[in-house]
Length: 113
Image (tube, rainbow, N blue to C red; front, side):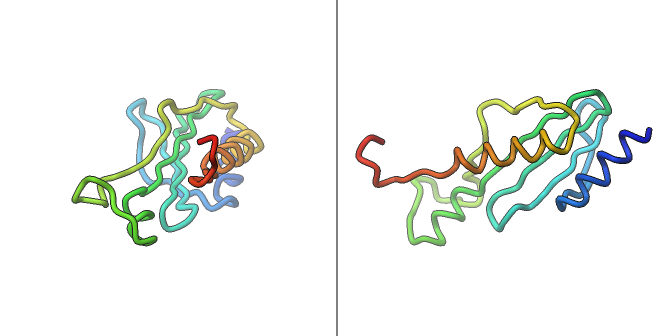
């Protein structure tokens, strides 16, 4: 239980809050990273957690004066094809968040795109 409490405290220090329960009966922790990007940690108490994220792509693009080919921009989300299972360790959570942020940096004007 001490490890679980330490992990909980570490997630709270990063700004995560418990926002629900997962399908496996564990807790879901969420961190609204900014207005459009939210990280989620699914913790079922095992030695690993699942880290996922969602980006409100429609609203993000609309703020910049762009449109998607769908009328309901609030329903247009970008999320990973596969969630990532990582060690139940706060350093692993931080490293995965950093990796995700790096992959979200897209230069739409890059000639090699």
